[in-house]
Amino acid sequence: MARGEDGLVGALPEVEAAGASGLLQQADVADPDQVEAAAERVERELGPIDVWVNCAMLSVFSPVKELEAEEARRVTEVTYLGYVYGTLAALRRMLPRDRGTIVQVGSALAYRAIPLQALYCGAKHAVEGFTESLRTELMHDGSSVRVTQVQLPALNTPHFDMVRSRLPRHPMPVPPIYQPEVAARAIVWAAEQAPREVNVGWSTFQAIAANKLVPGLLDRYLARTGYDGQQTDEPVEAGRPDNLWEPLTGDRGARGRFDDEARPRTSHFWAVRHRHALVLAGLAGAALLGAALERR
Image (cartoon, rainbow, N blue to C red; front, side, top):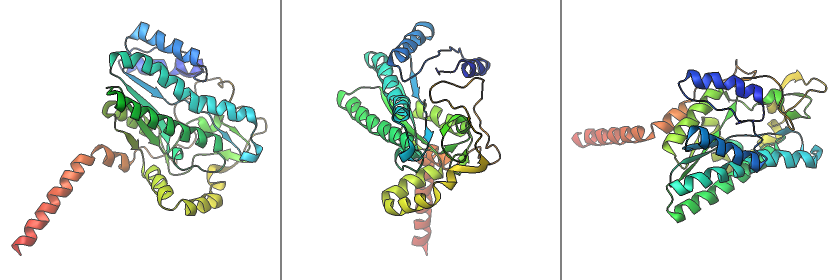
């Protein structure tokens, strides 16, 4: 489900090549009626929804003092309320069956905001609060419906070629940058395992931890580095089109322009997926060390 038909048409053959049945649905998640209609069509043509992934987003790269009210409304409607509307559509179907998983795709910026992306950061903070409330309500009701969050690092997606920007130079993700396949694997794993939350990448873990421990120091660091760190050396073309109000034409695929810098995997997520084995290995190692010391 997306606004742009070209991207959907490009994705469908890949879904079918993987052996699954695909269904294209144009919809703007900022419109709850369109989201509800999409959910009805999916259940009518493909059967009960087992997993619902909320991941639509928009942003505006701009200092807060230069933002326009309509931009704030649009980013919030898509990046926050789009998650709310998607969650509501999923719950209407999952709660009566008492099963299903909702995946909220988030970001390190849900915990640690950065300059020049106040609207996006604010929306991600809102998703975090909304999801925490929902989780406790499901627990109170004894529901078997699961909700999980995936907090992502910077990704090499076409977003940076389409986002509205007032920066003098081309916007870019804050390094380290990962390929979108890293996010895809994490989302699939979260849909299957449904942890409370999973942080993907050492940079995500470090940003969240640093914000808890030394938020003031992080404020000063981002004030010094956050502007240049989100721009390449390439000037932005005058009148560059963006996708704030309408999708851009063409199938832009999953990857952006930062292939040379993007990492195809992260050891942090490997550690997350194998944490139980690592704990057991650590305990076994400690037991062996203890036994060796006892023999001395």
